[in-house]
Length: 401
Ligand code: ADP
Image (cartoon, rainbow, N blue to C red; front, top):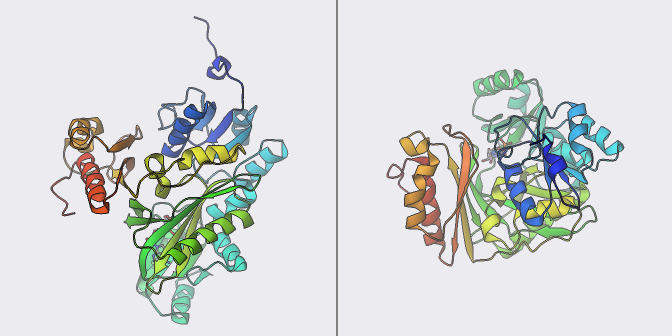
C-alpha cells in the first residue's frame, strides 16, 4: 500500500475546517462535523490527545508557531479553536493572508484577557462586578476598602482556567499570597468585588459572520472548586424578564465584539435579581454540553454552522428539563481509572441516559466526560444524571446527594 497523507485521501467536496487544539471541545466539534460531512483538519498538542484520536487529518504541532498554523490553515475555509490561547498576532497574520479566523483576533482578545474584557463591557454599559486592575497587595486592599471591604476576589487577567488563577482573599496576608502566586505567572491582576450570588447562569449564543444569531435557553451552572460540575437547562425558576435580559446581554456582546461561532457569557444572578457578567468564552463551552442531547441543534453543530457562515439551527430545548453532570476523574476505586467498566451498570440502570467520554486519561479532578439526562421531572432527571456521574467517578455511596 502506498503512503499517502490523510488529507489527500479525503474524497469530498465542500470546505475543510481547521480546528486549533485537540481537547474534548475539538473532539465534539469533530463529531458534529462528521454529521455535516465537513472534513476537519486538526492541530493537536500530541498524537493521542482527545480529538487527535478521532480526526484522521491531524498535524501534531505547537499552536504558538505561525508556520505550523499556516500549514494547517492552508486550503481550509475557516480556522476555529478548541481553546483561546493562540497568540492574536498570529491570527492577524493568518487573516491578512486570507485565512478567516473565527472568532477573529479583535474578538478573541476579550476572552483571553479579563482586564480587556472588563474595560470593554464597561464601555458597553454591560453590568459586571465592581473591579479594578491592581499592581500589588496594598492596592488590592485599597480597592476592597473603596467598596464593601474584604473579602474580594483577585484573578490573573490571562492564563486562568477552571478556577486556577482565581483567589478569594479575606485579609492583607491573603492578598500578598495571591500576588506571590500570580506574580510567578507574570500577568496583571484584576480585583473584583466578591459577588454574593444566588447562583451562576450561562447564556450561550451562536453568531455567524453575516450577523445571524441563535440564543440558547439560559442555563444554571454549579461550580465546585472553580470547575463546572452540573448544568440544568433551562435554569429552574428563572424570572422570565431576567432570562430575556441575560440573552439580550449575550446577543449584544456577540454583536458588539463581532464574535463568530459560540459565545458563552457566564453570569452571576444576584440575590437582588440582577445579572452581572463574570466572563466570556468564545468557543463551545462546558455550560452548553447539555445541548448535544437536550437541544434541537447542539452548540457544536451551531459553532460549525456559524464559523462556516451557514444558516444556524434551532437552539430550542427538546424536553422540559436537561441536566448535564461532568465526569471528573475520581479518587476512589477502580472505576476511577477504567471508565469503560462503568458502562454495564450505568447503561442498564438508565437506558435513556446519554454518556460522552473524551478518551482522556483519568486523573483526579480532570474533566474526562459528561452524562446527560432529560425528561419532564427535574428531580428525577437530576438524580439520574448525578447517579451516573458519581458511578463513573467511582465514589458512589460516598456522596449524599
Ligand atoms: P476561570 O477563568 O478559571 O473560569 P472565573 O473568573 O470564571 O475563572 O472564576 C471561577 C469561579 O470563581 C466562578 O465560576 C465563580 O464561582 C468564582 N468567582 C469568580 N469571580 C467571582 C466574583 N467576582 N465573585 C464571586 N465569585 C467569583
